Length: 106
Image (tube, rainbow, N blue to C red; front, side, top):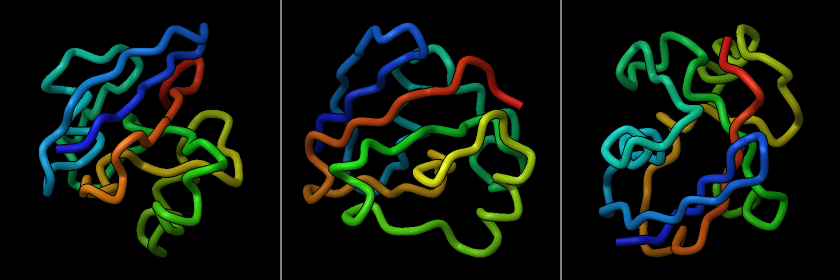
């Protein structure tokens, strides 16, 4: 299990434990984290689970895949640290990961 910090666009932080092997998006949905809609259910077919990965975690999380980059084109206010939370697999190495949500999803 890893503790994931979800920060909404107003700065409010919610920290939840997410089991290894789940995605950051699944952790958000299971814990009713606002700001992550996940309309496609994690199929990397939309951009409604868009998050900003905290700069301190970007290297550990890694870059988006080409398919994910294509979906991010549909996101709102995409930045260099943007990722789709459905594509970030939780592991012990991500314990303490902090992601923030944009003001709105696409």
